Length: 579
Ligand code: ARG
Image 1 (cartoon, rainbow, N blue to C red):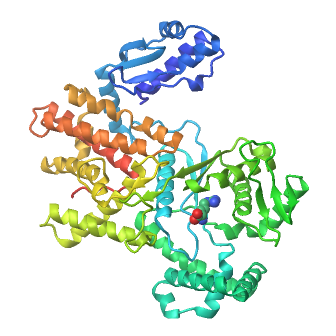
Image 2 (cartoon, protein in one colour; image 1 turned 45 degrees about the vertical axis):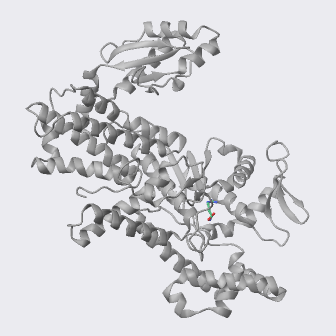
Image 3 (tube, rainbow, N blue to C red; image 1 turned 90 degrees about the horizontal axis):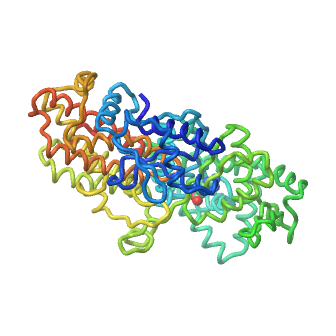
């Protein structure tokens, strides 16, 4: 069934088209009203439209409303303030839409009429280095965006752009040949590679001959020397095995892991082409793209080949972009990295626009995020001052969640408590990360994220489990509640109605997340949903209510649980039927 908000939007667009035939109807949208005092939904587009036509916005709004048939769905449709249109739904329209969800696999969501292809580049850790807290944000945020776009019916391609190529391999190869500790490699390959890198790096500071030796190893690798190639391959394979363990724990998967090395064979030809096209030119021996025509980039030219012939991060990113567009024909490419790479992506995007003007229709977005801070407000570090490794962080999350679960449910058998703790601990870490506005730094607090009250994953997971327990207590299956409500579903008390109204907005919130790449909207939606459910459950008896209220309320519980589960799933957070 079509949702009331989208029916109203279609009708409003038709009315607008009749009054202003020139209007861009895409801009006419019916969205949740920011303040429920004024209505359930709001359309703001008429104000801009009136401005463009130089007419009075309230006047225009009333002309449009005169042509809008909305009585069947709305109690009131009003022009407010400078020309907003506010809609208030009839309770029965809300109830009908909630009842229709019984049939729907993905309730309250409008699947995209025109699915887009979206490439998401996220996580992308560097070989031979541990994944650290910075990568957790990229991994969790990127995975969540992939899930949201998929739920909305888009085609998503995820690509882990592994840092598996670059100058660090000169030192790593040298270290591998001279200082390798095989026992340590077997025990903890990434820490051994990290140690090799640090050892050689330190030696290079003292000894220019060391530096020269490392440089020669790099040149050999790039020239395809079999020995160096084999070592490089082993380093990559061992790193990937470690990364995969983390992805497995987090439930994150990639369609592709091409990595930087994949593009290396294409780089020289690309640079030559850019020079031939006059887009790159030689400057002090290097090949450089200048942005003289772009005021914000004119002082930051982009080097794509250094004077010693080496390529860099940006060279690879340019070639990657071209490959992705040629191969997958995306409408949109997202890069999920921290905010320090903003200049890099502005340069790469600008260079690409010059190089491939025919791809101007592809939307390129740097979805950047801030840092994670410790409770002292400084960058999040271990007690001894080192960067926090992701694997250790996840271990600690499960360990701390186990304490929380054990305090609440001391009688459960230990393996069950551990199972719950895994879901709660990982859910808490993910949720805390997605809850903060991605562009601001946030303070990492175990206490806050694992709290059973407040806007946290455990709180929402408990809300879900509580609903599941209502069904268990009643000896009922959710399917029965769904079937029973096929006809005559009604929402009667203010609490039922408030909950029902909120359910209707699930899909609109997913759309807003996809539009701004901000999962925090969904977190806040789910938190509000759990709150409205609690108010309903505290005021309206469910199992003890007489029929037909009992069935109706059970159904309301069932839909709420389903939306909670789907919403948490879009965030990559699991739920449990029993906690
Ligand atoms: N490997 C990089 C890092 O760890 C992130 C790569 C992001 N993706 C890209 N196409 N540049 O910071």
